[in-house]
Amino acid sequence: MRVVCCIQEEESNEINFLLESLLGIKPDIFFNLHDAESFLTHTSDINLFIINNSKIDTAAVTALCNLLKKETGIIASKTHKNALPLSPLVILEDESFPTLLFGCIEDLIKKGTLIKSTGTSGHIKIRTKLLLSVIPLRGDIYIQLNEKKFIKLFHQGDNFDIDDWKKYTQQKGIEYLYIQRTQVQEFLEKYRLELEKNLTKTPSAPIGEIAENNIAIMEAIQEIAFNTGFTKETRDLVKTQMKVTAQTVSKNTNLSKILNKIDQSKGDYISVHSTLTGVIACALSSKMTWSSEATYQKLILAGFMHDLGLNNQKLAACSSIDEAEAGGFTEQEVKDFKKHANKASEIVQQFTEIPPDVDTIILQHHEMPDGSGFPRAIKGSYISPLASVFIVAHDVAAEYIRLGHAFNPLEYIPKALEKYPTSQFKKIIQLVSSI
Ligand SMILES: [Fe+2]
Ligand SMILES: [Fe+2]
Image (cartoon, rainbow, N blue to C red):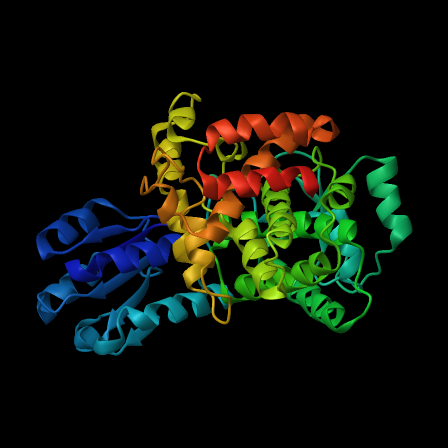
């Protein structure tokens, strides 16, 4: 999908970020008529044209729009209303541009007017187990035969029971089935409503099951965020999943029990690592006597979101910029890695009604006490206490994924004390043996 913006320079950062987080794309941005005109003259595959630039007069805006194809969507500010030759998708009040642009694009995604057309198929993978929570099925379910071919296995409204699940996973080894991108939001909304019901149930589901679902939901959200951006429905789902997980963790902070139930070799690296980091951080914070459900929610949400800006699973396993630069990744991937903490922290700021400080925890998750971390290279005392807990949990999770059940806290602690040699971290690291 290609988006071109002809806007004022002071709005460019905000609009650039907004389009990247919502549509997962980098727009082509121009501040003056000449540059925009020459770009539009030579580019034909533009899906969306956004215009808000009072320095460009009516005749020039009309000329620019005449360079667009009929099917290109236009979002314009009211200033340009009379200049538009084609009927625009949306006209926004000048004062509310770009504030309202966010909701407006979200609406267009929801209506299906804007869908990022990547080269990939129109299907999103869903862990087979998740289907059990959305009965009767919302959406048609497909099996993938090859890169381009999908065959419908179940229809919307069908039942999917434990025997179906066993048939596909245990007998045929199929961990993922697929749902069309246009139906995935509805599917996840139904899943979220079922989850909401669990919030009021006591006792809640066992931690192993919650963690497994957490991983499955993260995998789906990773794909959605990459393909269609981070919509309101996606944010609501993350919030509900966070609440259910935090509620369950608050009843069981015994880490060895939790770890025994998470199969670290199953699932995408980012999803497993993010879930593990969140629950390990909760277990550590409970030993620091920070054991409120609000604190658990912060840590679970930070776990969920902290690496969301990364699409490459191997890249997410890097702990420093040096490691990413030496890892054979493309220039763009290294750039994404350098920016991912900032990007994820900005995405989480768009959430409403979430506990404060989650953005700080995410922003600081690669900082080091000696100032050698990133993105801000701040030193120990500037790293917030909860971010310090999260950083240690992040490191423990990486070691646990590397070693599996051979992970031994007594071998881990001395190595970690060398890596994080300040009193603030020392106290947290020593707690690893007691969780
Ligand atoms: Fe991470
Ligand atoms: Fe990270």
